[in-house]
Image 1 (cartoon, rainbow, N blue to C red):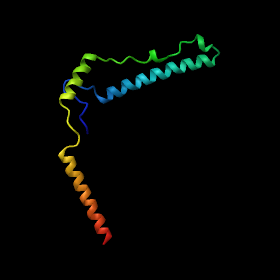
Image 2: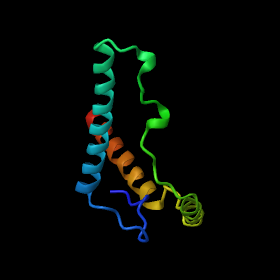
Image 3: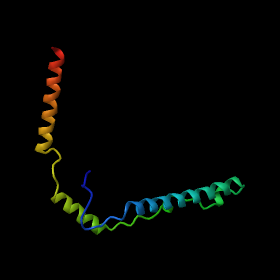
Image 4: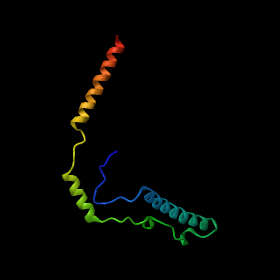
Length: 106
């Protein structure tokens, strides 16, 4: 599995905790939208309701300084994806496919 976006400096919360948080956010949004829909169907004018819009979305906690340092580190440590191992394995696959093709022609 890729470790590209993992850093040793920031310990990740457990997956179960992340999933629980995401679930509670989705549930909160769903409930709020359901309440608006019920009020509209009950006969209230849509203009009088507080409709959740783009500003209503949950705030993402983003520290721009941390992001800048991460980008700077990523640029310094960047590795090209096409390594010699990748090239060797590709060549081996091509040769094996060619051998099968030749064996099938006989």
